[in-house]
Image (cartoon, rainbow, N blue to C red):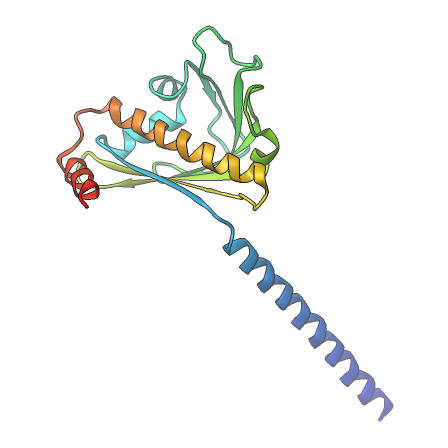
Length: 196
């Protein structure tokens, strides 16, 4: 009888631990789900193959985003960019991102590895990562969707979020300009969005 009670107590204790673990995981999931994300999106008048190369090759990045670029496209690889034409890769003005994962022509995820020396929010950037989605649309068009996560309620993190909203919008607009004129669908959506 004593042994049966011990087994029941052990099972009850085990069940209690499992229930506490599940409750903790659920709480963490709810906290993470409540994190504010930053979404930036644009339709590019170019096929997904071409847009993918613009994000994942040295020449592609240098054609619209940076004066100098070096990317090692592999999980754990680094993407180094220098925006200043007179700068050099590896100097204080070089931004370095680490590739977390990728699926060719579909998705690329990155996190800040080392920001440029003049980056205004280096501490907050350490907890943020971005996932860039590439969705083929009508023949010859691509929807680029950047989802950035990891922002907190901390003041610097919220300042970073506002800063990155502007930077992402400007970057996507710059990418769209590379393929001007805009596609007919883009113009219709823009006109519809501006109507009261």
